[in-house]
Length: 263
Length: 264
Image (cartoon, rainbow over all chains, first blue to last red; front, side, top):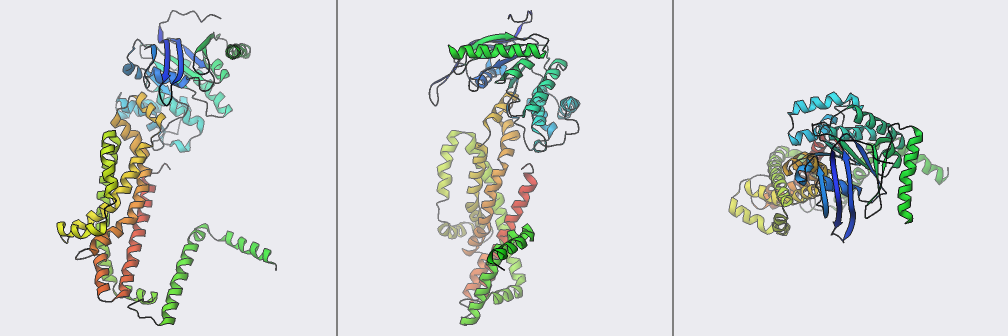
């Protein structure tokens, strides 16, 4: 299947990215990974646990240095500048237990001094209903369910209004029903709220080991091998997203993964 | 009634006792038993009250000298609290320095540990020599006793920051100082309180010890004076007050922790 025809510029481009860890012992984490996320695209990377998906994100935001290759994000190759162009959401919600919902959501705006405190709070408050958090603004993380906590984490990520959204298994720690709910909700929010629009375009990259999650959410899926992580294949998802086509996508992902295991 | 049903019966009764009582009953019962046998021993043996006064006599003497005890207690409490305040400031500062750089950590840690090997028995009289008979030497002794657990606890709290949370702060664009203020210091507060709880149990003893080496007022010098005038009952009274003050401070720190660390 060919990737969807689009003349959008690549928002994120990885070119032959490799990563070796030297300590505690030499370990090849990623081998020559090349991929793109175009403006407006929601892309997933599917792979088994430990295939270096999280390492890939750390490379994109410049937390770890590259061993080889190049990364360009919204036109920037400098890792220090890239850091502020991506909004990173983790598997753990990483909410600060001493801050209430709104104070957690505005953490990014607060440290970047993007806007005055009262304005930051106001911007978060406006979005609470859409995130299913209306009336919870004064609640502390301990009083929230896992799904609500993850929504606060996503709100914190989106309020940064950065071009690139990086999602590192954001729903992996949730129960199956909550996960389905949040996936639907994320798809709607992604399509209807252009929070990441800054004039430099927007895109999302999701890493997950959940094939169905990738199929439900993405426009395109990269399949990654076990360590060292390599891109095994690329699968485009049709716009219809009915049960039949989702199943076909799932099948294709599994075939790509399986083919690698056999060879 | 068999032994089994009797045991079951008493278990049932015990279950009905409020949990608070169950919590406090065993230590209180033990203390009561100890005091009762002490009293009995003194009454039966006819031992001189200078060697070992009966608890009843100690209570009597405490009540009779309550205004003296009160005045000296206030001095000792004041020294302990000021010493603790110095320790918390010093401990937090040292922990932040140790945390700030590997070089500082390597430079400071051996000195901090060595400071705890100084025999305070030997140094307390010297402190009196240097700082005189007023409050300073006592506050120094209290600080010497208490800054270490605070420093170590807070430093390990700072060191225990979640790695992913650090990456989060980094990607949010936070500077080192912002990360410290927004994430690492609040996260280390429960550790600081653990250190503080250990420190308060030393604080009153430290103050009493400082006074013992030379003072005008305070429970330590009061104990010494009473011992020298063969008022063993008053020595015991002062010991009781010392313990009570330590417990009071300990409870106060617990209360403070509940107020500050609300998210736990």
